[in-house]
Length: 329
Image 1 (cartoon, rainbow, N blue to C red):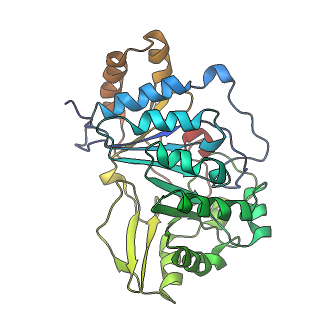
Image 2: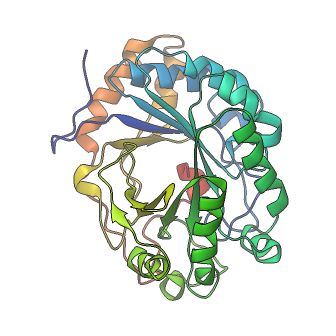
Image 3: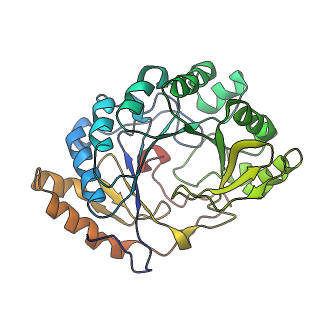
């Protein structure tokens, strides 16, 4: 089997595929309040998304994560999950979601072969949650988490983006909630994608080290060698099965071990979250409909474009103009 190796000898084993740029939330760190979304003709069809997933698994990719936008607002998402979940060689099939649609979809996702969920949760205060998401209902998200547990998901992780002065006082509450619900939790440093008007990223940056210090005021954290092929550095607590992870693109750069690429919903293969290096897969998909070899050849050739690292800074400047919902969260 041909596998994907970049020019820095890193093997790509993990692909994040965005199934939509649309979302029923408007989180302040992800997109602007007034967004213009892609026309339908520019969005990959479900069949094209499935073809992309198959091409990557035939090139040695072991993990696929479906992202957005909010993947559960994509019409036909349950069928797409079933198609991808049956692919040979796929060892880890996950989704990142805001959780609001899980009451409706969780059982179909689990039956379709999905094994893990990441649920974005930045606050446990309903009013603050509404301000951070602009439209979100906290009760609906928590109910969605319970629906996923009832559907048989054993691997559910919370993702929390911590902003100084906005929700940094909730770090311990979020950890305790994860412990009570028997969930893992990862804390994510905000990434400088898109020009957000809601806040100054330089002023709201809150490092993983700050978060860790806060947690260790109540809970001992023991470094763990565990990995899910993603960028989280995991820690265990002696008195809980819940893991605490840190995704630290600024303070603990993880580029040297990067094993990931992303495909946007418009079919751009992004070789790096923090750079604009990309290849247009949509043109190949539509020029050779149903043919995997031209698509696989293009993906293999693209590996030489994968840069060594990103150059994110914490000074508030926008390094990449596309918003996170356009990148694939």
